[in-house]
Image (cartoon, rainbow over all chains, first blue to last red; front, side, top):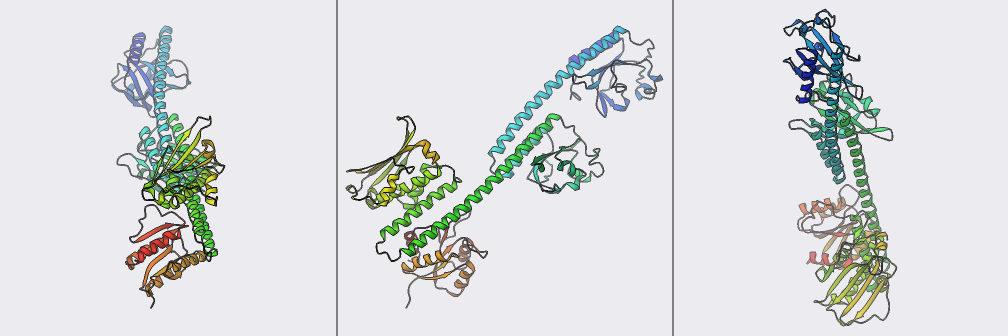
Length: 512
Length: 120
């Protein structure tokens, strides 16, 4: 709207030309709203606005063409107008409508004389007055477009910021409070918040909201019924847009609850899901306010995004809980397997295989812990390797070096078993059974053969003389299964230390 | 005269309780075993000679192993505690003083080593 904006030269020029052309002492560009008329430009008059009921311009505003009243004192609709009866003594009026391209008539360009003019304007003067009115309308339109596109850009930027906050928030409270702050600030209102509604759409649980300085929060549970006839509206999924709670038919009967919260105008934007209102975005202004269509569109987008963001977080929380529960049961089951094996094998005299079994079981369980932390998505190779080394010990003598590599859940489990066997062997026969022995684990991605291959190199140094084993036990078979269970393993029993090279395609690792 | 240190095993799952009991007895301790925290507290109130409590976390009856550990730390400060669970240790909760946490399944040699150093 151009209402209330500063004077501009183009409009001043138009009223000057109108006044000269029509030989009238007063010329005005008068813009009308429901309560007042406001003079965008004026010549010969000392007031900037009047109440709408004193406006001559609003008479027959829906009629096309020039309105001309030769003697205001003789016209039934103007004879008791204070501008006519009072000191300003208006007598003659002629006004051409200001019509936007949309067809909306926003006011009039008029000329006024303090003497009755029974002869009226000449044809030329009327034509010129109409032409000037079209000029003024074009200027108004251009300003409106410029202002509204600035506003749109502002709202668009705010919407992008809301999207970022929603994406980056790890909990519902942060998400709704930060998004509400952006909404509240860009609309320059007193309060903004978001809440989920119950199945019957009787109550809303407002999350911690944003308020302008000095304005109280409305976080918590509210019954729609307590605030007027607004519930049915929201239940139907229609935006509740109230420019003035004192005059709106849904709230005027008992605006006390609204006023107690300092609400003069409001928008409640419902979010629908499967035909049901599930949430409402709330915006409150302290004073009366006209809500623009682009603001309502903006609020609709924010409300939809917030609801989707909250639903996403809830689903993630549920998934985390479920993963935790499954993992807990799985580990209890592994504990039971351990207990059964231990009891069953209690009388077996040779203890080493029994202990090996238990250690492998524990290694598998540790790999599950790593995967649980990533919700059974990808795990990093180094994190998996460190969990195994942590469980066995010797962390200070195992040196790891390599880039981040993503392992799928199956690859993470098989790699952790391989790591466990290599570590166990190093402790029993290799570098880790001597105090100054060490192990280097390096990995890199090599692309020489076309498809990217991960190569993990295990090198022991400082251990006792190396002897190749005479028979292949289960442990060495496990190692030979490799990174994804399909081989790609080379073992070398070199005099200065045992070496293993494990390779697999990066694609298989991430998918396995 | 019995000089074996006494370990109180608290575990609701019978098979795991049997397993833990055998493991700890084989390591040279005397074991009293119970199925929940309330029974454990009843034992502790009547037996001042318990040196170590070995407890699960998730158990029926309202008091879990973590609350039991906190209660023991307050009422019987000299008793050492081993806590085991299939769940990770809860974020933001401190492990009580003189208590050690093990993830389940655990390595028997680690548990026994810890028991021995606690009893020493």
